Amino acid sequence: MFLAELTLGDLRCIEKAKLTFGPRTNLIFGANGAGKTTVLEAVFLLGRGRSFRTHLNERLIQHGKPSARAVGILQAQAASRRVGIEIHHDTNGKSGTSGRLDGEDLRSFVELATAFPVQALDPGAHKLIEEGSARRRRWLDWAVFHVEHGFAKTWTRYQKALQQRNAALRAGRPEFTAWDFELAREGEALTAARGRVVMALAPYWTETAAELTGLQISLDFDPGWDRSDSLANILTASVGRDRMRRATSLGAHRADLMLRTQGRAAREVLSRGQQKLAAAALNLCQLEFLKAEHGLRPSVLLDDPSVELDRGRLGKFIGRVEALETQLIVTALDRDTSLFGRLEGVFHVEQGRVSQV
Image 1 (tube, rainbow, N blue to C red):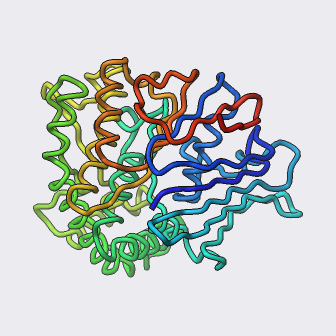
Image 2: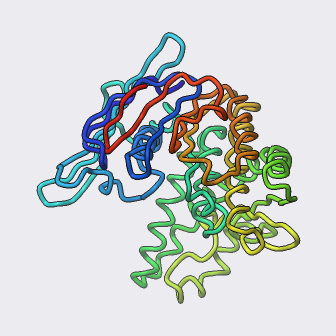
């Protein structure tokens, strides 16, 4: 499945645009601030229901407009699907995001992830290494969702139980422990699924990290509690601490990917440039794992990758992405095609106007 056609309306600086993409490599070029990244945000929006630049979708609405929209035609052999996302302000000034898939209202954005898998590498990619565990959990869970049956339902049940338990803790209600059974059951299942995927990713990571970074960086999984004991027992033992903190201190919501080099956490050792390389390696190993073991080829978005990678490593990265035989949409300042091989779509963006070259 690839994105064959994209229509935009009132999205950031782009008032109106229509692009036709090829199933392999597509280039969008133009000056900084012209709107190149906005196109990638729209593509990502169709597969995730959000931007990769901000968690506040309302920021994508063009100033002074009541709503913004992105509509895509997804193509897979002879079959096609239509997906649309609208971000809007209501009469009270509140914002919301709604979507449709094949003419039907979306029940959940999970439907988007199933219909159109998409991954992005942007100039803020180093945050995957540098920042806290939440970003790395999202990265991991996106892969787990695509390979572990029932993971989305398990994740949803865990989150609901966690929210209820934390709400009771904040209110000082003693019945917060009523949620422990469900939290433990779903947390154990969630953790087992994550652990299986991290184990399967490990050999891809070792080889990819060595090529892109030149370093030996280990990849391990921290489940969010000491697995020498069950989560049910851990929750019981943590009652006093949780009551004092008014939050659930241990569990699957505290899980993390542990990257270490030279015996220390990677974020403490790696330079900003090395963090960017490590983040690129994480995304690449994830994509290679999904293709090799599950036949999945997500569309890949690269936002000005020359900011992340020097020319030599960028050439290696592009070559390996092309070997995935998946759709690639990449932005750049100019129309330098020497790194990207044969281009199926070339677009120029200038002051919010998109033209196909």
